[in-house]
Structure formats: C-alpha cells, structure tokens
Image (cartoon, rainbow, N blue to C red; front, top):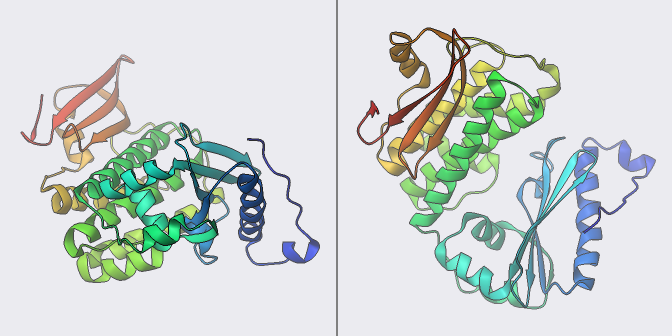
Length: 313
C-alpha cells in the first residue's frame, strides 16, 4: 500500500499540534482507501486519539478487520508520522481477543470506530477480558523496547527512537503492573499515571521524566557514550528511570528479582578489564539478562545472568 498524500491548510498549520491534525486527516483518508479494499471494520487507537498525548514522533495506529484471513501488517512512513495498519481476519481477531492479545483488547475497549459493518459492535458486547497472556505480552514488548533503548544509549543511531523506546517500555511495564495488581486494562499516559499514584507512587516522577525526554528529544546530542556504567548523565538518567519500571514489573508481575545492571557490571568489573558498556537484552520468557561489554582489547563480551538462579552462568 502506497502512502497517501494529505495537504494541510494554513489554518491547520497554526494549530498547537500540527501532527495531530495530520494524523486525523490521514485516518480519514486511509479509512476510505481500506473500505474500498474490502475492510469490514476499521478502528483508530492509541495516542492519535488524544491530542494532549500525541507527540511529534507519535504513530497513527489502525486495526483493520477483513472477512477472510490476512497474513501481514503494513507500516508506512509519512513525513514524521508512522502509520501502522494492523490487519486481522474476523476469525483471527476473535482468537486473539480470547487469548488476551493486548493490542486487540485495547482497540476493542478504547478504540475509535471509523467504520464497521457490525463486527466490532457484536464483539464489544461479548466483554472479552485480559488473561495471563496479556501480561506476558506486555512484559515482552516492554523488555524489547528497553533493550533497544540500551543499545541506542551506548551507540546512538536515533535519539528519537531512544526516547520512544523508553516511553513504550515504561508504559507497558506499568500496564503489566496495573493489570496484575488491579485486573484492569489501561490505555493512555494520564490513566497510567493516575493508577501509579496508588500502586507505585515513586515511579510517577520517573514516568514524567521519560515523557519529557520524548517530547524534547531534539535537544539531545547524538554521540557515542563510552562509559563502564550507565551514567546518570544527559541520556543515562532516562535509561536508569526506565530500568526502575522493569525491576518493579518483574517483581510484581512475574515474582522475579531483577538486579540493577550497574550492580552487575560492578561484579563483572572485578573479572574483566572493561572499556565500556554496550547495551543489554532482557528476556522474561528465558528468564535471563544479557549484558554486552567492550573489553580493553576491543573484545566483545556477552555475560548471561540467570534471573531464576540469581547468578551469572
């Protein structure tokens, strides 16, 4: 599918959030195009529904349902907006809702229906609920985003991506915590912060810090960070804040103790001559934390920490 051209008027450009206006126009145009291609239901979801939460680097997410199965999703870059078209066959959608797939549950409960031949209306009456799989999925996506940010910290290829990954990590770790503690499905930063006030008040300031970093990512310089530890410097303090969400979520949602990466690096420093930290990978499924290091002789060292046994292996 090719990108759709949408022109903004001078009046639109004077609005506080030009990209938000663009996202709404794109949603309408893609809705028309997708209807012609046989869609039976189209739902807009995520931050593009909330002007106060939509940032310059936010996405437009659409869940599109067809009568027959479909094999792939579509991603389209449009200026500063990434358009994500998540495609489902009708039976595929029902299966994913029963399993508790987060994105489908969020779309069904909080999404804005742009077009529907009755499928979404009928499914909303069935009251699908989150499952254990919902928490697992959020822990997986949050861990993946934290990993991406950690590699972007030590070797920044994209500052915008760095803060976007941190935001998504903090958001999904928070969702997992809230679902585990209260059994509630949450969408939107304001609602997440409201729930954190009761569950994890010490994380509220850190969530705000990460949001502020994402909003102002253009102020940060793209440069290599060659330090042994994750430093509480320009970029490092945001990564350390997101790490705190991971540690809390692993403890609450998975009953697993996740140590601080800097503490593990201190242990490894006694065994190796470390030149600098080089990202980490966190896997709730494998119950492991991989720490990447560059040693003094330029050797790459990957150390594996077993979260279940609470030791390096």
